[in-house]
Length: 242
Image (cartoon, rainbow, N blue to C red):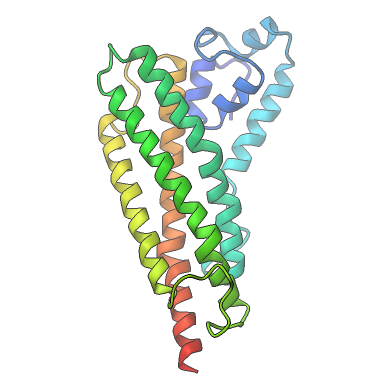
């Protein structure tokens, strides 16, 4: 939990959601890095309590957990949870992190030659994941919900362009593997998502945000690969057998 006496650098290093909140209040992460939150707010005539409330709310939202065990959810509810929690985070965080990576590479590229490669990988991850979630939401997920509503494969939704659900499931799992390979390379290039000693506050916030995003992505992939997809295949098999 952020405090008024912490420096901006300390806050963005400890809370992945802090950078975007501070930037909405027009608090420059680099020029105020060594100022306490109280000092930064005072200089901009901001209410430190209001900023702290927004920081706390952002962290609470980011750390939200499923209302029940995902394995006990219906497929329809699980799809809704994945879209609202994990897909929403992809849309919110990946463009922001990719923009930060580009900014850092442009500003500090001479000092950190690996930054150009990180910038490129973030663009690749952004492209992969945005295309991936669009395919899920427009093609696979409507069919899974259709199955869960006991409508059966004999009357598939208009979005279905496959014979069995195992076909798009295999494609989505391949997408996950591709994303994981990019993440592994990012982990290597960033020294385990650890900023260099000379990193500015923006640079630190990138590493903090990327570390948190990857943690969420791991849970995202687990929910789909290990819970949603096997149950969808099993359900379709049982319906066809009947």
